[in-house]
Image 1 (tube, rainbow, N blue to C red):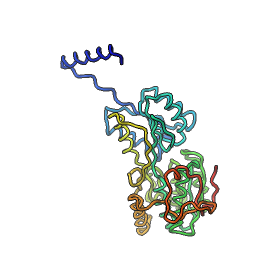
Image 2: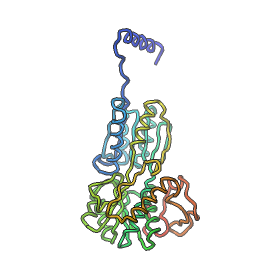
Image 3: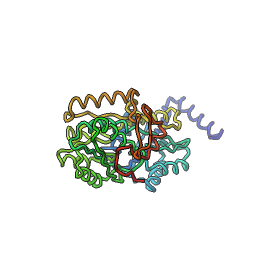
Image 4: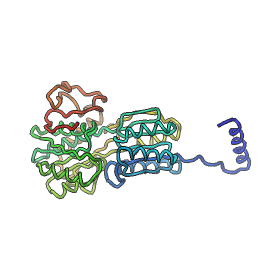
Length: 360
């Protein structure tokens, strides 16, 4: 603002005040979201939209939020992000890993807009990243599955072979194996975050291989429905509680609690303290929740799972604690050692005992 316009604005404000008229309220902060799936997926995108609604509830008319759903990863993400920026959103949340390059490209074009990228690792002065330690919840799921399986075969539906998903597979297997040395892990890759038909096919393939527990790193409830149809297969809710399938086949869940983070970051925009940062929260910070463990789970198994949850939350125990070897038998972690976050963030190998081949 130049000196002339400043003086004009100041004079106008003085006239309004002298006349006893109310001053014009500040424009609300505009906050945009893009989702990889529909808000009704009852999983990942649904849970992020619950966080958006929490912003509305917390800040009322101080904010205006909007979203674009079912945005594929790739070029379309750049279009959607640009659209949100041109619509006047000055804080934009991009809620899928594959949006990363699109976020960086659009952020460079709109330096005055702040971007928040979920599960990514690239940052800039106007780009923050945030993630949850989903592997902590997978450790608890593995414990329950390892104790309860009758076939000793546990299935895992992978979305894409990125570190986040590989962490989950390894954590589930390690903890199933700890309580059941005979357990096997079967992995089917869906190569999608949300596609009910592909997810149902993946679940059916795992069930056909004899898996009586099916874990998923995809977002729809299709694997739950397929397990329900089978009748003797158990599942865990992904991202949200998926309560419609409890108490069986869904015996518990990992729940992504984005609300506190979203509220805090919008608050930082409103008070002018927003700065680029990297956040990776887990059970201890409340970002990862464990859903109700249903009556299908024996009481002693439930107690064991909840004790593990408490140890992880307190920091007493890390789900990746040595001795642990890589799939090829080489040493990864010595007795009692735990990995650095950077090592976990780049995890691109299975642990020893998983016989499946990890796609490159």
